[in-house]
Image 1 (tube, rainbow, N blue to C red):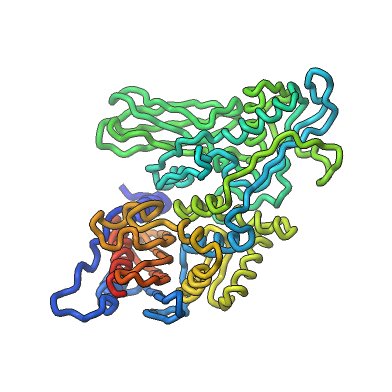
Image 2: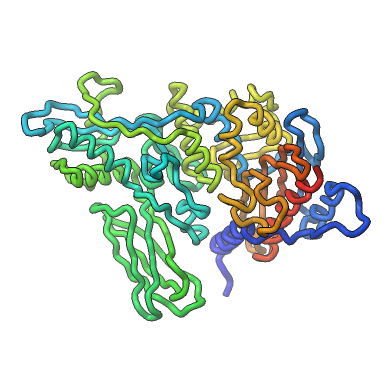
Length: 521
């Protein structure tokens, strides 16, 4: 059966994600009597036949001295994938600081009568908080898994955090009840912090985010031939499930289709009996209306009645002018420090949150569009003395239109190595063989395991002749065998691959380069 192009691309994209958990089996150890420095063996990796029409870009620099230790096409512009997030998070850390906390207030507008009846509305003012308490653990950190639900539909294998995505809203609702309010006419989400925008193919970038503006669909197989169990998280009265998912024979592949219309999420397909729980997601069409319905549910659980129904469009027309004086703050949610958000974005490559940082940075400077937020990154480039001609940035996540030179990337990493918050930045990156997108990227016995903190990146496309690996990239910090600290960027662009084994091999080759650099210095 011939697979349509888009599905073929998604299959390979899943494989490319797997290749960071395949272990490094690329060029192998150097031969007996070989050159003294492992760097001289890099050509054995980059010169393989699979790269006949590809282009490599490599920059390895000593961050303390600025000495260039190795360079291959360092000034060329490359598609860098999600390593672009290194710039996005760096700019936000520079502007906000690692200790910045989002504060999301709730205001009451109207008169509170005896008995706690508010003759008016509650207004939740979105602050751009990417997690809104829905990932906060008891120790104040932000939870993540190595396979985030944001990629569940494209890649499968997603794991949900143990936290309650509605915890922040429940906290706010309880505060409202504790000030004595028992009934309100309506609830409005004020999402005017910055303008909603669509970047790449991701979820719209909005100031209000609850559960990444997704409903998780959790599918658990039963015995072969029996209906699978299907649940959703968070539960809401506005959306109901209509599930028709069967349990197939062991050893099969899941096949699940999800679509939503008129308040119903339809889930159909099959899952294998031995496949374990599958997670998929559904995105409600309007983030503010979704958040409003969930907040109304939280208020009612806390004992605050809401006269207006939870469904329908967020009634933004009820909002007063910004900074109106006839409002009383009745609740607020304070987030964990921004260093935790940085960790979530870089560890699991969270696209929505990376793009949201652009809106947040714009708002910090009094602007209202993500494009103006993107412009704030240029201030970082000037501070780091990075030539603006050495890169092109079009979003926060690292879609295919971004271009970065290896030397621009290592210049950023070197600059960040000398900032007062450098350890927050470095600790936010995935660790080779330990966590995030590099969790299982090398065998347990690899000497480089735990010695590399780096962001990965992938861009894939396809045509009628097969799959095109536009970009595979890794950039970050490396503590070499000698203890010497390095910054590095390794990009490879334009690799024609014929199937999953080729895709795995490219990832292994980048991992092998990291191991060689570890051994070299």
